[in-house]
View (cartoon, rainbow, N blue to C red):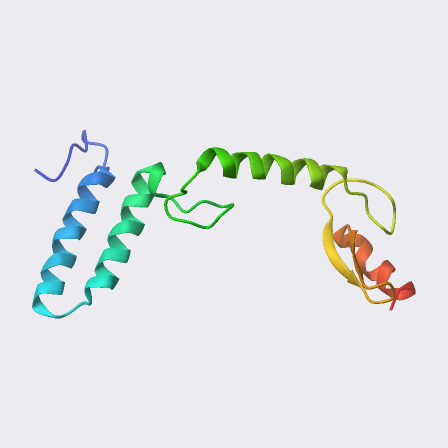
Length: 123
């Protein structure tokens, strides 16, 4: 009755869970216990957990992404730029983070472990 668990515990289909929750939220809105915009936001969030097309885009922040191809090309370009950056302290590549250089008023990229050495000589 509550889903096909197959005898291995509680493995209810997430789509069925979303439908049940939507019904409960709809009833709460009708009784005045919940605002419509809150219920709808919860519904979109629950559906996004099940349907990839409704997930928030990590690049543009829109739900759903209006142009996945464009965002994918932007992510690829950002990755190429990040891969070409070298640490201003040690000169090696890798995972660097942006930091403000107060002397020259520009951004320098440093490894997390190089930050304290950079700050000793560049204030």
